[in-house]
Amino acid sequence: MKPWTEFDFSDVVPEHVAEIPGHLAQIAYPEHFKTVMGLFLPIYKAKERSERALALTYELIELNPAYYFVWDFRFEIVRAIGSDVFDYKLVGLTPSAPAQPETSEDGEFVNQFTLSKSKNYQIWNYRALLLDRHNELWYRGEKLIVSMVLEDDAKNFHAWSHLRWVITQSVKHAPQAFDAVQLLADCTALLLEDVFNNSVWAYRFFLLKTYPSLFDIDEELKLVTAHIASAPSNESAWSYLSGVLDDKASSTTAATSSAVQFALAFQDEPLALQFLAEHAQENVSTYYSLLAEKEPFAKSFWLAQVAE
Amino acid sequence: MRSAKYFERVLTLAPLRVDAEHCATVYFCVLGLSVLAKKEINDTNGGEAEKPCRTGEAGTILGNWKPKLQQYIEYMFTGDGFRASSSGVRDTELLATYFGLAIAAMINYEFNDADKNNISTFVLSCRQKKGMYCNNPTLFDEYDLNSSVRHTYAAFASLKLLGKNINDLESFERIKSLQNYDGGFGMCVNDESHAGLTFCALASLELGGSLSSAVKHKAVRFLLNRKVLSNGFNGRPNKDPDCCYSFWVLNSLRMMGIDISLNTPALVDSNQSSQTEIDFMSSCFDSILHAFSPIPDSDPDPYHTALALAALFPESIDHALVIL
Image 1 (cartoon, one colour):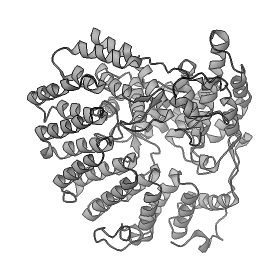
Image 2 (image 1 turned 180 degrees about the vertical axis):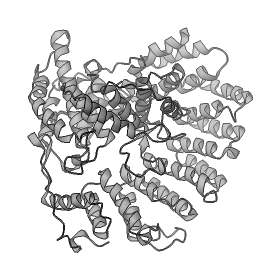
Image 3 (image 1 turned 60 degrees about the vertical axis):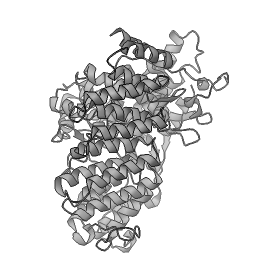
């Protein structure tokens, strides 16, 4: 990518980066920042969508990636100046990437930025704006980059949110982009890797709701109870158990009775008591009383439930 | 408590990264100072057990900064709200508008009716199709991407500060649809629950008078399960604690009438070392800067410091600043 210093800005009257009156939380702006922001402001006001404007956004993002207006303007520019920059590319990220069109400068920048600053809010929003809704490859590319981020940070909230968003969009606009059965199988494998990863459990529930034909209450019950048996203090698994049983469209009373029977064996565990208090037909107040003993910091709340 | 000096330092000189969220940073400094100032008053008037630490320091600092805060409000005000960045473009943004209005409320800065109406018009213009709000209505929003329950909370809290009605049934329904199977709320339907977003969702419903007992009951279980260590709360199940979640969780519970007190850790007076168990909040306290970091041995910041203080001293929260 051509750096901003290689463009001619002699026609631009730079703006002075103002100091806050009273110097409240004053920032000692570095000279370099003042120069770049000073050029950016008039170009932004003039809505100049050009290569040199793009180069300035790149420099400002390097200096401080948290300016929403810089990212938004960048998107306007990329969208306006043509498909050669706008084309989405993933080649070069990984040898296992599926065959894709050649890499563009913006695509490369976006991918490298995603991998190095995956907790930045703006980058995920920017990726979502770029999505070509009717291109299956694009959806798979997004899933690929999400998995690359999750390799380093398996609970990255932004990455998981993005994946869910991408899948939701694909259902509407490119239903062939993903194989739902494969997505669920991959999710099962992720649970075996780390059964305490709440993001994976939430993702599993999302998959069942997005592709209702995948939702087999008996299969889910079998899977989640096996995971609870191996790690009874896992909040994510207990919540998931409640989640699938409370889903009116797919659950059955037989499934709930069987889960309650299962949970009776774990009464030392507050999470099991919470589950029983909400799902058992009998002894509900006993479970709340036991919770009041086991979780003294919330004693008054649990005791109030006994009274109800 | 010496954290007042920390906030004063940030109000004097801030690092470059603060520029993109300048209004937010000033807000958290003012919030922290106001908690400390109110605590000083409470301690002096009624606190028997607790020794008042340097009575009046936070209150004095806050008083000294008021004229500058007033100038600041006038500088960041765009005519229909607030801008987020001090150096950047002058576009009005919703989150910055909420922070600006809260700072103004704190120092009793009055906007005239015309300004109030303009701000209110801007806030309502951030409303997207499905009833959620976005940060800046001029942005592309083909996918309804920029809107979230964070922004919706900022919109409702701003309207509340402007004395306007919040009566948006479609929005309340949309927020309720974000409640997950575990009782927490996420960014979109069937997302992963998150304690901060849960606070925003519950507070938005509460502001609209639309927080039902069914929603509350489910949310309480999620919130109670966030406690993982002594005074340590995480934002999501099976994650490590972060000291800002002590605030998001406890304040959500308090809003629903469930009071869970923290054992105020010994950090209030760093000369005391009588703690018997490792306390999470204490371990996030930097006793040189007198500020809190998100997790032990990381860098403190005004956001975590203000929220940690608000979590520790809930009776000292000024509800002009934390809108419920």
